[in-house]
Image (tube, rainbow, N blue to C red; front, side, top):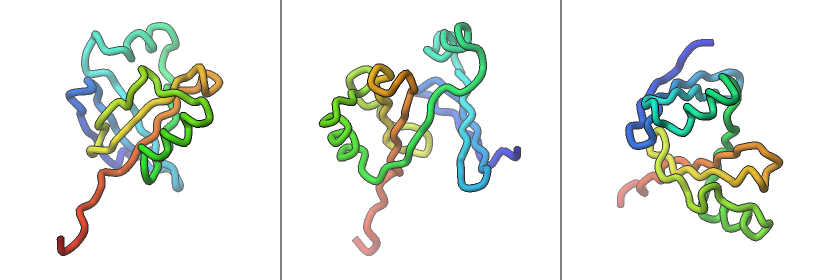
Length: 114
């Protein structure tokens, strides 16, 4: 598997690497700080799948629709900016059968000529 990109996200205290397999993008995450919340996960669960991410066009609208279905945000709020400036939010695992799900919206592009 060839790495197609790397990035350090300082405010989230993680390093990420990406690989493309077919039409799927795989993101490998490594905590860049010993006090990161992922360290506890690694100690308890070991290496492996942490979460699944889905790209959405409008994260705010998606979260509103999920909220109407009774699916809450993890930590009660969106996470903020992820790699590449994407808006990200994690869903409450109690509402998703224990699976940690991330929604991500590409950084909004400015209209051309405006």
